[in-house]
Length: 624
Image (cartoon, rainbow, N blue to C red; front, side, top):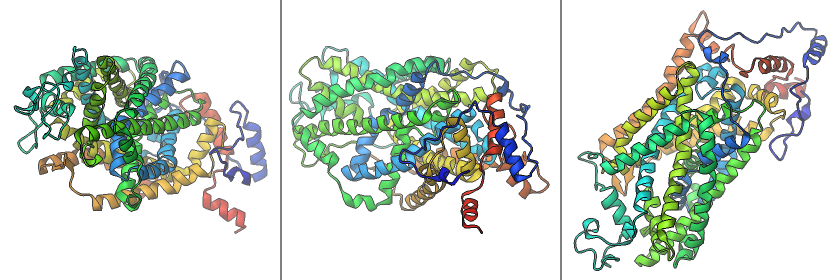
């Protein structure tokens, strides 16, 4: 390869185009004559007996817009509305935006693009793509556990949104008027206001006392499921079932609405939020930087986990979506659009949220915004409903639209995670009916989801979010990059992407994938584990049995890595265990583009490509 191949381009990709229809055979013959070698071009491999799916046509998106809107709907979700604002505030306010942008640029976006590339190149879900490095196959199953963990509690949030949606059709919004049945006897001194000595707002008490009927602690268990929320939970799972039962053919149509509708509601909330009394104080608190926080590794860990959670990396959903793309689709453009939309929505939600919290501070006469900031799902079901109740014109209408928006935000991510899990089984057993797989996933998820609609459900949501939605996704995303860059080989992957996209990726991607991401994420993870304090919910510590349950979730995901590696080694050829391990790190014979024609062209291209490592290139240039 010419030396100018390695030059850094400002946009991340250089402009040398590769024509995939070009015949490489003449180039290959010239290369043979120049090197006087007898390189043999391998033929496209036949299908492996254990991979019957290679003979089955894979469905594709009906058009590129369905893919793009599905990615936006998946990434721009509930995490932007109820997770990002409080995470930012607790980790330095405006100063947190700096590490978040840095993480997004050098970690989040590269991992997002890597997952898109893996899925589109191989046209497989998150397990089968590890044909490129079989010893890392367990990572694919680990991401499945992460997706299932997030999916189960996401649907409980959908259930809450559905229940509030139904309540919004009442003549008077129930959380806008004080009722001693749930506010407590003597706490209402008229029908619309609380006793001034009470430090909680009406929506807060309504959510915790009437909707959740939440326990102060879960030392004695989490309690029985609430029948009202259980019905809403079943409705949510039925909606997900019908959204993905036909794969991307059905979920792609849903994405048009789930990707665009939320912005209409957010715009209305923005206009109303910034005009509330005290809104300026809240927005100032959101952007006011605490620069000392930048020196805390925990802040960087929070930035990484928020970035992963927001973009939905590490769950296999991105790989699954990209696997249904045409082989030559422009995923570089899509990755930029999605990451920009995700960041814009997070900042927008932060402004809206803290404008409303500033108003709550004003209404309650609190000394600091800290007194009214609440994390978790309560933010979406306390702060926003409070602002809606203060609307002068038909608050019921906006309440209906808002909770419909929450539902659509959750559905976008939930259908992606459920579809990713279903694709694993459909790829492995292509003759099984998809609705059987989808139905089994939904029944299992609904059964597990009952723990979240109990009086201790919010405790369980935060617990599973920390261990299954944060820690596991962090580890799996790190191992994905290590598996591709260090095991399969960074230059092999770069060459594959050049063949697929027609463009040579620049040093930006090589440095991020090969050096920055593996080292940075590993160091931050180890430091955070050492310094990690006790997990709490509403400043109350979890009982030991709950922490054990959380680590059981994490262990279930992590144990798939050594198990997958062990199976890969045992099934590899070799006279000694060392030979088997080395063989398990090499791509399988059937790794490559799914299309036979593309695979033949790819093999020729690889034989004609410069496959020297970075250090070999330096050595050759120095003349050593």
